[in-house]
Figure 1: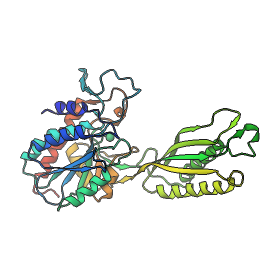
Figure 2: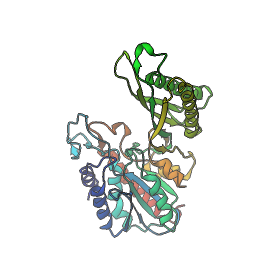
Figure 3: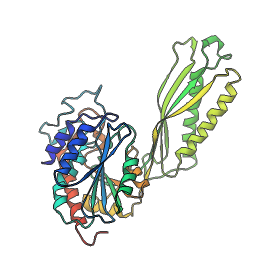
Figure 4: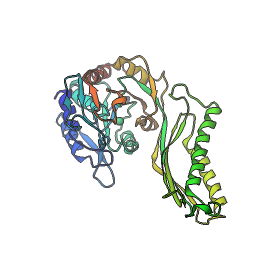
Length: 388
Ligand SMILES: [Zn+2]
């Protein structure tokens, strides 16, 4: 099958993050197995989703993992001019469809290159590692990366995460954490604001504390110029609370995210914030004994990626992608999770992240073909006796 045909097939499965991925999983599994490659599944507890992994080539150390996710983000509320789940060629050099860039394009490249990988005399193996639920917090990759490390007798050395990067090597990524903070105050007539505890007023105080924390980190000179912006960010994106101007709000909550550069620690920032919350609680419980602040993690932290510009993986990707630059990103990906398992990791894949998650997502055909060429070059590299 041609890369466009495979991509069209993958796009036709409307599997969102959080949903059962059995249909797309089975299609990919059968496709891979039709080339005589054994596929292994790593299911979730409910057994309605699974990641897959397989090895092509010899069982020797030093291979390359190709990582991607099978799920996509929703299309609800977006104004699409084409059917998002039918890959559409409008004759402008682009293929439109949900997931065309993020990141079924890369999966299609992997599957297109598979017959060539199977035929080649690989000296080092290639692994496919495809996950579910990436789009709701990179939930499946830690287990898959760990399984790959333990399942095979040999140990892969590298992981290439094929997120859309316009085929440029991405070697750094901020850690990302999403929190929900719930404030429980006491309701009452607004004239009694000094006798009650407004959940809104307290929520605002907590928000200002978080903003101040970010500013303090910046003032302390904690910066890493590889990133844009070069400092950690704390951002509150959603606030809710209250019913009327003259009623003291007994409930308020806000959702926020924390994106840290490698030198900053999410857990340290969180423990300081927790300490401040506990302090406010004990102070305000004098006025209202049931006053409470609860912090709930929206999903586990996605770790940062801190690959060095002179690591071997960067040389490898530069060689096969034809791109001599490198860059960093501030969005979540599975790269840091593979790095945590000890694999040298970097992001590189076809398509542009600017097209991801929006209406009329597309991938330029040229990008898709560059992705296939990169994998051809990878096969060449790994067929070389000298590869290390
Ligand atoms: Zn993605």
